[in-house]
Picture 1: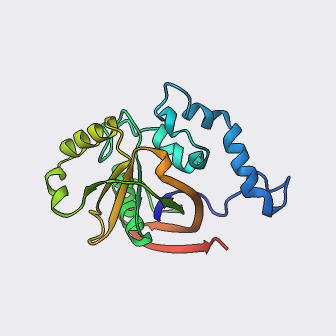
Picture 2 (picture 1 turned 60 degrees about the horizontal axis):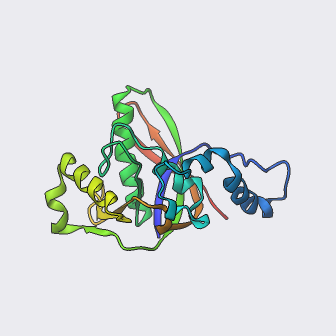
Picture 3 (picture 1 turned 90 degrees about the horizontal axis):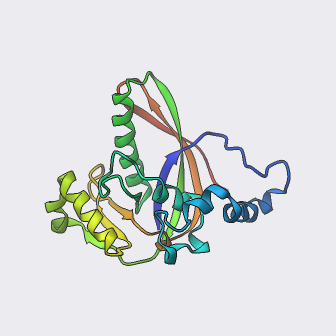
Amino acid sequence: MAWRIIPSRFPPVDLFRDVAPTKDWQYLNDLEGRTNERLRAEAAPGGLIRAEDRLEASSSHYILGPLSHPNLDGSRFSDGTFGVLYAALDFDTAVAEVKRTREAFLRSTSEPATRIDMRCIMLDVRGEFHELRGAAGRQYRRVDKSRQLGCRLRDEGSWGIVFDSDARPGGTCIAVFRPPVLTNPRQERHFAFVWDGQRITEMYEYSKAG
């Protein structure tokens, strides 16, 4: 199981709130995802998703989004030409990783004090990942080397990489290259970071999915 934390707003407004009972929202969201032109384009031939990886179980925008829309500046295991979904294998590590990257971004843009709403998405994970924990990962601490490795492994058809968290000692993260290893995305909780203009000083939870 993996935890991925993304920006959000609270309370969320469901697309089908005014047209269907709550018990049907999950099914309607799944149906909307299969007919949504944007999501269909993400998995279209010639896109960044392999033809053999276009599975209904992996059709959620929570999975396809980061894989179909790469960070053009690159990331730890991408040179910016393809997307990678990053997640952690426990909630505390996911928070630590996102807190660190969010603080760096807010400092770079000189953001004034504010509150940042976030949501946690839980995902089931099944597949073989390239092992980069412990000694295996030390030679890939430099960004240029880790990006070269990510490009090569993705070209070879790798599902992804499992690696040590830099933000939380003892934590484990994954970098996913292909969507079929992830299934059953579901919202776990909403929370907020409190940014004081220099750093994130507090985190408080709004609610848990019930």
